[in-house]
Length: 48
Image 1 (tube, rainbow, N blue to C red):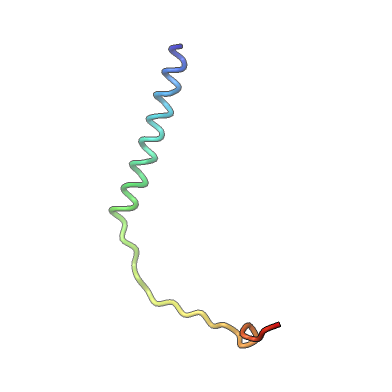
Image 2: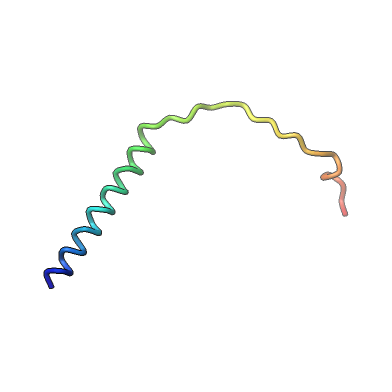
């Protein structure tokens, strides 16, 4: 039984660290907006 509690504690700590990393990335990293252009060849508009 103690090994189960140790395992669950380690899994909980790893999950908490992962959640903290995702939270920090979502709130503290700001993406730079930039313009994007994509050229589409005219033959893509033709129906087959």
